[in-house]
Image (cartoon, rainbow, N blue to C red; front, side, top):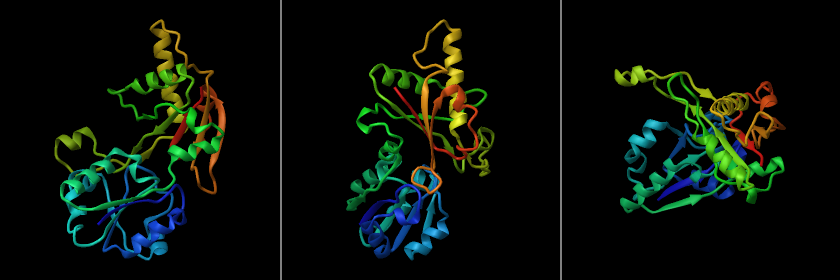
Length: 257
C-alpha cells in the first residue's frame, strides 16, 4: 500500500493521529523536500515519529518515482508531504503511477495554506484561482500571474499567491554541461513578491494601460502560518515592498479584492 500523508503546516505535532499510526507501520517512509518549506528539521520529525525518513528531492520524485513505489504492492510505503498531499501536481502523478502498477493507495489529508489562509480574516469561499509568483531572471520575467490576479479582482474575488521556492536547482550553464552542481536554496519573501508585482504595474502603465491592481492596492502578507511566530499584516503593495523583517522566508501573499 502507498500512503500519501499530509504533515500540516508548522510543527512535527501537526500530523494527524491516523497519519502517525501509518508512519509507524510502514517499511519505508519518504519525506518530500522541495515543494514546501519544512519549518522543523528532518531529525526532529524522525525523533517524534520514531522512524527513519528518506529524503525525496525533485529528482527522486519526478525522475525516479519507481524507486518510491518499489515493492509497495508487498509492503507499506509512506510519502510525507508538508501541508496536504495534493497541494502540488507532482503528488497526483505519483498516485497515477501507483494506479497503473496496480498498487493500492490511501491519502491522509491535513491542513495546508489553501485553507489556513483564512486566519487572515478573508473568507475562503471568496477566493478565486490561486497563482504562483516565480523568481524573475534577467531574461525571463513572466507576468501571467498578474493577469489572473486582475481577473479574480474583476470577479470580486481574493487571490492567494504562492511564492517561489528554489531547492536543489541547477543553473542553465551547469544543466547544459550535465554537471550535478546545485545553486544555494532560495525562498521568495513577501517584499520580493511585492517588488515584482509593482514592476508589472509600472510596465502596464508605461504601455498606456490603467491596471486595476496598483501600488495602492491593499494586500495581506502572511509568514510562517501555523507557527508560533506567524506574522500577518495588511498594507498597500508599495508599503509591503519595504516590510522585510516580518517576512523572512514568508511563502505566502494574499491579494485582496
